[in-house]
Image (cartoon, rainbow, N blue to C red):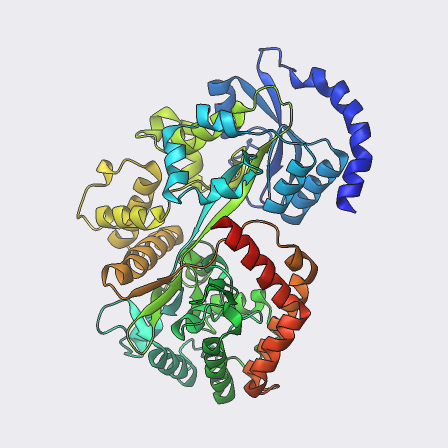
Length: 550
């Protein structure tokens, strides 16, 4: 019906396009080309007073360097942005440049609404931008290619592990609990349970409400970034990789939530629930409920991604300056840490069909993600952007809100920043301003942990403790088992039909398994039902696409 609606409206869109052809070459009085954007926003952008999404450092920079006046066709956040994109597609009248999802990209290409960027990418993309995609073996460019044509400029997303748990170090110190005695930045499941038990029995938070462990009702995550308050790290220790599609030894795809190892992990959580170590209200608490428990000191073991301190744990640090968290990976009985490496794609930057200068999208990306990002003296060359960095202005302010970084660059950057902050090298010798800035924040915390700003601690915790110590540490120690799932970016029609249904089945059934409302003897029956309700069709379609791609 969506395509039918587009078809019905395209006739009128031809007239609109004809009428708008004069607008394509519209210029300001100063002669700057006017270019319209679909602008993603954030409610708390931290913009300095006087600046806005319509008028900010990035738009002024684009005007100065490229002779382009950027104007918003629409500005919206989250679901509202998605709605605005859908309305523009349905009307056949999209902005000159905007960021869209993979499904929206497909729809735009099918209806002839966007430009083929194959040639302009080859001609105009800088060597640095091309090297970013090359570092991922062009996974993202392949995802943006439809019928042999590059139809968008994709963002990069590197979902690398291992998953980890953050534990209140101040509580460990108060209770004389020593973890990770071998110094490999990983703890066992037994150590995890023992620590949770002591925290709860001793009321480590002093609130009278301390819980051993609290988990979100959806229980698992399909990527590292959304692993906050989930049991993904625990399941990985059992060799289970929930919400992930893997290729089995026979070449057939396997859904990671439906394996025998997953059953073992669920049995482990059921035991914790039965013993009262896992929050008795598991299955009913919201994300905000658990986050409030973390901030208020009711839980001291918090599963979450490496960047959790930047936006989550810093809330607890701000509320209670004495609160500090140390991250640990979870190792199995053999001393191995399991994790998933899933090269991903962010949003896709598309250019309107017949736009006068499609290369402008690439030139903006060169400017922002190469020239500015790699500036050796940002404070002098780009003072307004430098000021934004000091204020932690949200990245959505950029004209195209995507991330562009090399594969595993976060690890290399964190090692550089940590070494410099620790005095093993000089901060001034670091080429990247962003990495330099992180090194200074880490050093500020190390020099004065009492008086430093909570954001200094968050950078110290995320970059030095999590990425440098844990993620890089387990790799350097040779104890990391990296699992590479199947990467498919095409729309899976069977998932469109039945994905929500089987996701709900998985979520609700796993809650019952953990709480004991349903016995784990029924796990195989659940897997069978999952297949009957659409899972088998999804696996078969993915299997076919995977075979074609390889």
